[in-house]
Length: 253
Length: 253
Image 1 (cartoon, rainbow over the protein chains, first blue to last red):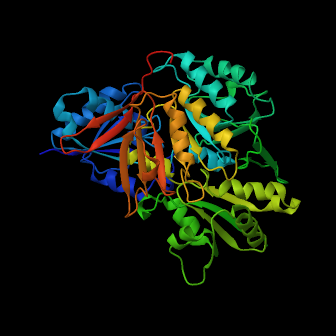
Image 2: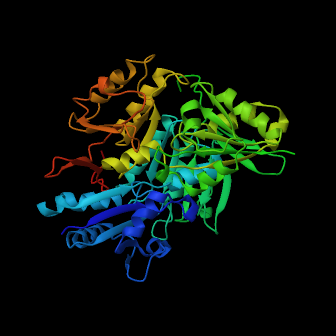
Image 3: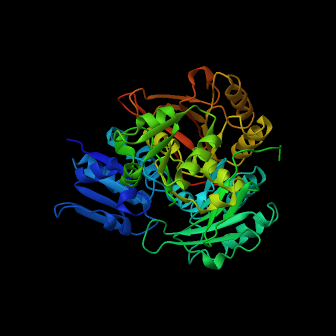
């Protein structure tokens, strides 16, 4: 008898930002599959089998989940945030698409979650108030030229940008190159936010602008948010600041 | 004594897709403010005051919420999906930014939710597997030329597109014009999905492609998702289909 795969977005981190639908799917799972820190985040009984794995093995993980489900197990494939946004969902369907025909019979249910970009935006104010895009800065899966083409197109079109995977030890220079590119397009005063580990105990927020954005303040757990010319900063008496993007676009940019 | 504003994303519709954090904020509210159908969706005790209002009065609603909070009330300003994505969050901060200096003292907490685009993507498979953008097609707040510039830029850059507010009685022609524009840029086989009222009883999904996309099948409650050349359809033996966008971009497009 065939089992099932739930692809579950765990949300930003805090349990109160995870939906009851996600919790219900996790409660049915006989097996948990995912990047080890995400698997570890799930509360589960002693009979549940945890298959934690390293980063960058998404396709192998997906294939493993499909094999387990076809053997009758109920598998929760977990991602941080939303599984559809640079998480495990696309890897699962990619594995099915390129696998044996029988794999298309597997039952897959994707459970959405609060993505990192939405959690970061809420923490900052309302920086996504207008049109926006979400771009992974990693060149593991696409040429750097494509990344740059997309960043330039988004900036020229006035889209706010959320950058995932902005920096790693293996890629220390890309974020600085991205900032350099964007400085040729955007006014220097356009707000930039570094939102690290939002909703988790080690949360940290840095507000700056594109002229002064310093890649050294960013690590792999940081969501980089780059405003547009309609993104404004509100300064409060207590020293706090809010970011928001005005909804009205007056002129053709 | 000053009160507080919670800006709360209610999620796509089903209570199990709303976070406990959102429920906790709603439970504290003395006043609910928002578009009448969203206010009606919230379970609340008899002492809670419901201030439902029409569409298109976001700024007045935000000002009302600020005045109530400064008078000591605990106000939940509610939006469907995520309040930061074409919801009430930016209107609240815009009102503060343009209001009296005292308004900057109001306590505002934005609670993120599962946005309509994430719920629709999960229902369809994993169409947001690569970089993507989220664009409102409404010209209430921006010139149509800006909408077209953004659509063209996104399509040329290979971004998957999620279109909010695709069509209304007052704007019956814009979606067809958008499709016509995109047909000049994208291959006709690029998948298009119409995801209506996802997570609600009247949910409906239509899969087509950009060559055949028919605006007559779309209403204001529909999220229009337009793939990129890496978005694929998986056909299942039971007649169902999944959409996903491959993660790997091989060449510079």
